[in-house]
Length: 108
Image 1 (cartoon, rainbow, N blue to C red):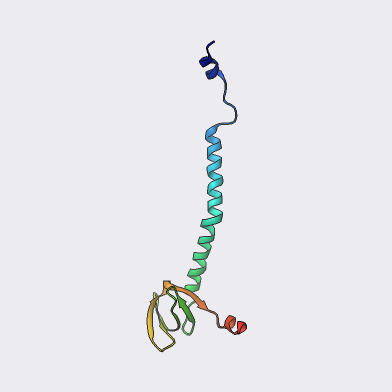
Image 2 (tube, helix red, strand yellow; image 1 turned 90 degrees about the vertical axis):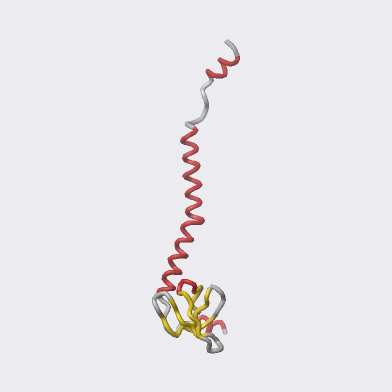
């Protein structure tokens, strides 16, 4: 026998390489899902619930850093009054957070 025929006759060791690859891809996807996708979806849901709960009189902070008190609420827009009595109309989706007055009094 020639060395080439001996090399071709040797069976491959291990399992099916396609199955191993598939298992590796599933593990990578699971890690990706639990570390990136799931927390991001939970944060998006929390933010949407916060946006729905905004009401007149709430103190908010916008994504741009403007702090104001809500004086008028519409479906997609809010009118806020800033510190120098300027009124601004902002898109509801641009609200970063609602300031909790209870938390502010506990800190100070």
